[in-house]
Each structure stands twice: as structure tokens, then as C-alpha cells.
Image (cartoon, rainbow, N blue to C red; front, top):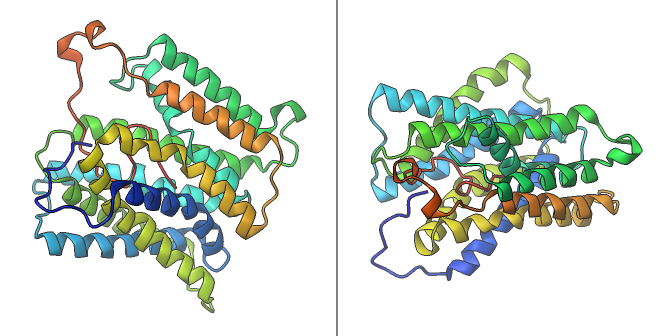
Length: 327
């Protein structure tokens, strides 16, 4: 994400406080999804999440008097980004958590950098693969197998739910490559791009949801509050927090939030949802995060030809730059 222009006024809260709040909000998103699916269909959870997120971002656009993007080409790219970074992965995580615990979903989310590295090996990404980054991919893969308990034949694991969560993370990786190639350097503000993208994702779900769901006969308070929190906090307010942190300390430091999300998601699932945790889950998660960290190391500037250095990417979603993603 290209850092925003420095603010003329000092933030009310230190960036470390906002960084911690961001990690907590995104970490708890998996718990909110789990609780939300107890009262609503997965598509309904996703639609509500996007709707409330759009409302928060629209309010921010109005307050800042920002302008929406112009041009059919930009809106076309935003529609694809909305599908790959919002509508599809949000829905996949909601469906996945029907059959897998929120702890596992949070860990699967952390594999996004590994998918990005895998795509770079087949020349679908502009990031240069190096030996260290390739090693990170291998280490991360071992971590995934550890989380899934491969040595015991994936016993007790819901294959479909886990596959959906991993596919959601893969969608994030593909989406970020698409965004960096099509929306970088447009000159449009990140807030404007993000708000438009989430709004388009809301429209996509507004079309799909009635086709696959029916109106609930009753609405329970706790699932409703979870969906509201998931959208207003996790998809709206968290994005605004992210922008401020990136503008103040840069994308590298801001992206470190990635490594706190699965830890918080696991702690929340165990403490508040009584989800069972075996030794291989936290151990495998640490290995996954170590591998993900290695895949984010950059090649030496002297080794890279000047013409191949990528331009800073505009980030129109609530995912931290390059490495990070959330449900």
C-alpha cells in the first residue's frame, strides 16, 4: 500500500494501540463468522458483513469528502477484485466454518503468503522467487501438514471445510496479484478504491444470496450482533485503522499484524467457543507463520534489474500489504 500523505494533526491514539486493535478485530473475525453461521446461512453472513462494512466506509468517504473512481475500466478491475478479495473468500470461510472450528479457519487464513509464493514460482506474480523464499514455501507446507495431522491420515478432519478455507486463502493471493497488476498507480486514493470494491462485493452478494437462501424464520440476537461486528468492525473500521497505521509506520511494519491474527483467532476459539486444541495445531501454526515470514523476504536491490522493480501497490481491500490477509 502506498503510504498516505502525512496528517497535519497527530493521531489520538499511538500507532501501537491501533495496531493491537487491528490484530484483535481481525483475529476475532473468525469467531464472529462461527457465531454468525449459527443463526444465518453462510451467504447471508457474508452479505451482512459486506453491507455493514460498506456503510462504515461510505460514511468515511462522506466525512473525508473523497471521490469515487471514474472510468469503466477501473470499475471493471474493481469488480474482479471485489470477487477475489471479498465476495468469494468471505463466502468460502463462512461455508468452511459450518464444519471446521474457527481456530483452523484462522490458521488456514495465514497460508495466503504461501499461496502467493507458489504462484510466483509459476510466473503468475511479479515477485521474484529466491532460495530463501522457496524454502519458506516448503517450511510453510510442512506446517500445514502438521496442522492437519497428515501422519494420522487426517483423522477427524473435515476435508471439505478445510479445503474451502484453504481455497479462500488462495483467492486472496490471486486477488492481490490481480490488484497489483491492474490498480497500482491509478492515482485514486486507497479509501476510494477500497470503498468502491467492498460496495461492488455487496452488490454481488445481493444478487447471489436470494438465489441460494431464504429469509430466516427468526433472528437470534447473538448471531445478528456477530454479523454486525464482523462487518462494521472487521470490514469497515479495521480498514480505516489499517490506513492510519500504514501511513504512520509504513507497510512493512503494518503487515506484521499477519502473524498475530491466527494466534488471536486460536485463543478466541478455545476460550470463548470451547473448541478443542491438540498439540499439532499450535505447533503447525508456528511453522506456517515461520514459512510465511520467509516468503516475504525481499531480493537484494543490487541483484534486481532497475526495470523490474515493481511500483508501490494501491491496496483496495482490508488486507495488510503483500503478506497479510484475514477472513
